Image (cartoon, rainbow, N blue to C red; front, side, top):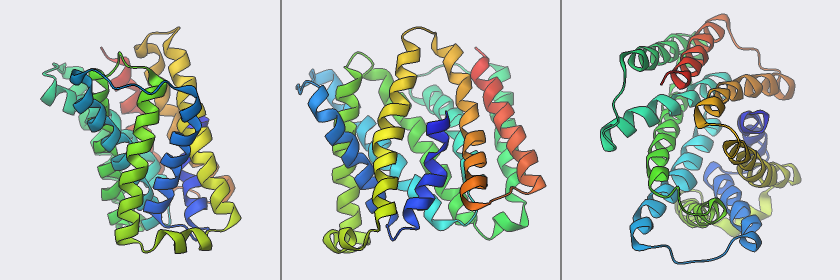
Length: 273
């Protein structure tokens, strides 16, 4: 959770080093693709896996990274979007209910509602009102993360290394194309990136996307998902702590109160069966 929480302040650190958000996301996925290439067996999946695999790769590799770094780039305060990213959990439950026809018990509806109430409370912070675009962008990130979890249900039998390798490839191709179109010549962008920017994007691709997630997959081998998932509520806490040490950012009282409501709701939501 420390590695996952570090995605926000380290992402801001990288974007401050003369990197554009779509270009940063593309390079992150490029490093995932290159690092996993030697360790996975390249196969052509069965026909039933192809569309879900493409959907997962577009949502997780392109959609999540695009909206994540656009939101980080558009704000000066990281606390609201770090907390807002927790909405990916209720979004995944709502989307699963819609597409997979999974039933949602009353307790879960209560915690879903209270998590959105916490975000609504944070939005009343006067400082946040000036950065409302970043808040909506992180909602987009949470939506694509939730949608990717639905697609992941259909490809759970595929090798994890292969699915992440394919996700990295698709994410890189989509984001590098968008970067070329909307942010300018990618070769010019490469030339202006500072050393700290390269270190940040390498950390995001190699440590957060591979090492951090692989640690979670390792836990799933020994513990049930219901025991592991509640720990996701810890990543915004680590993100806020790192934001303080790196940027000296201190959340306001209203943001802390809303954050407590959101994180507590998400924790209970994941504990409720």
